[in-house]
Image 1 (cartoon, helix red, strand yellow):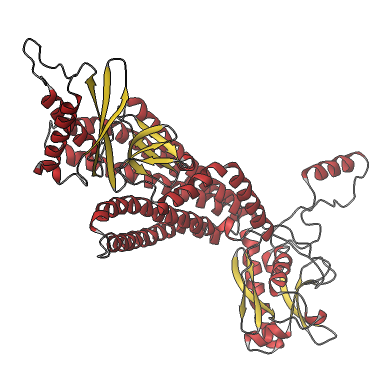
Image 2 (cartoon, rainbow, N blue to C red):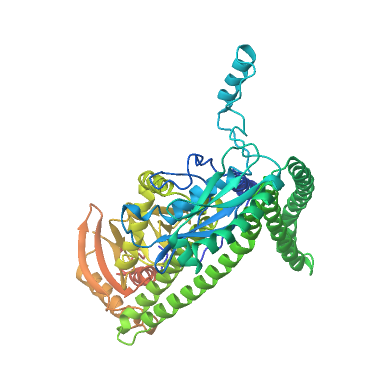
Length: 595
């Protein structure tokens, strides 16, 4: 039985294991690229159509859309940002405290409605589904020729040349200023927004001055947005995007080929380093590994760039494309920050555990055990710190994705339901995790202990948050889930013991003399300077424990320091055999008759 912890070196990977490892890395790369493409496609979806043609900012109306609106508080006001083509243009305000039914809608709701009104003037939208458009075309062709198509993207008559669009200020009977768009072909102006008293107070202007400022700003931005959605600019943008995607795809193919070749080269360099055939082989191995990591990072950057190009192909997605291009840098900064945080936390954990392990109040016979627990706690707590920082990094990164940043409350609730379902599916892992924390605090065993867990015996070589690894006497590794460690037999906690069994022949005529010889040898073993330091108590003779047809079983008990019982037992048994060999020596009898 092993008496001390042994650090088992990890065996080299076989070719099959290396292929599995490379396939896993390739699969992870494909998943990342798919996620990048999904982010690009999701962010390129246009804002949902807001039905705002009846009136501007109807207070009792529930408006939903995909437009990203920043909301917040500024003293006595709640704010909402209005965007054109994703770029902020104005900020509307509402009272922070509800003043009654006449206070109007919230600033965020106003901003969504205003964005819907503005987008009607520059973004062509078809109010019908593809099936409805096909049905209308069939009816038009069969029996309704000459009628006005209801599924026409310009069925409201709001599209046209950029220069033909004008924004005017209208004064309502109650004194409020309303901004409306004058479009050729429409008998009445199209309402856009109403300048409220809160808007004027927040901007520090009168309602009339604010309406004039917003009129000029909205007119310029709406005309620019119409040019962006012009056919010529759309064709130019698609052509440039197609060329850019082709170049990036070719460059990615070259990088992937170089990455694969570098991975094929790594095993050969590793073998040459193991053989020691060349002095520069270790340097070449390190350079190849660094080059391979650089190529992998370049593949990710190219995937992000392709997603940004896809976004740029859609009108009005320049801010989203910039966000996507900035994501690698932002993610890198987050990773560096969390790596620094993890290093600080690991250092703090190590410092606290060192103070705990070397506390002067610890008894001298418990210091070795405290040191053993220190190693186990340090390993597990550092893993917990790394896992926590990894989860924070994942949440922080997902939270920064433009598409996922503005999820609605329903989406958040749905994700919570999904997490609850996953918790039910992986309840076994959660149970192992909680059991691991309990084992960590309960001191049932530590690294280096020889234990028995549910019929499995071995030396504890690793204590994780989910499982415990044992190395059996035949060097097999047994992985036991922490939730199965309910009954543990620890042979080496604080102290160890071993029973020494000696078989004496029943033909002995002087049994008392044989027992005296055994007791004498036990006393000599306990006084031996080599073994006295390892024994916590002098060896004890327990006497005859059992009897068979031919032998008498004599047992002795050794109490040793933790992990020393096996070596001490073997040494004592050898000395007893040597001492009793040939005892008693009678004339005409061969030696060894005591056994």
